[in-house]
Image (cartoon, rainbow, N blue to C red; front, top):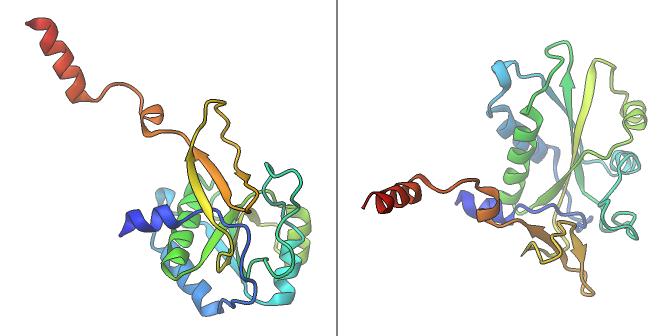
Length: 204
């Protein structure tokens, strides 16, 4: 079920690095994204794939991980992603990517979960270094890097506490906690049915 995939799709940052991901799997994930909506159907997104250990290491060095975890510099060797998908925008097709890359990235991650994998969207990127490393032509805007692998950590959702902090954190067991706002907090206004009942009671 879609709801199950969504709930299992967490931002994983530690992986079983020895679990390999074939390029064919990465192509399948991009093909899922290819079928999603695009603003004005311009389809400006382009992708670079990496499942090679040497190339993965070069990409890893261009990324910043988990800004809220001040004492953690990112996954250590053995817990690093097995693959990456770099999402680019072709500026000769469109100068404005709108929300295409968000739709694409979420679709790729849901597809990864369905295959027993997990991942993380990364936007904290040393773009100049990554462009040089992967020899990305100037016409392509670097939008996101998706790290992929077999998750090697537990991520749980907590309600936002009394301190109202939304910063994720790890407990002494290494479990990753992510505070989420309640449904009532993010839906504004009373439901229509509730308003009708209120008006009806006032008219009696």
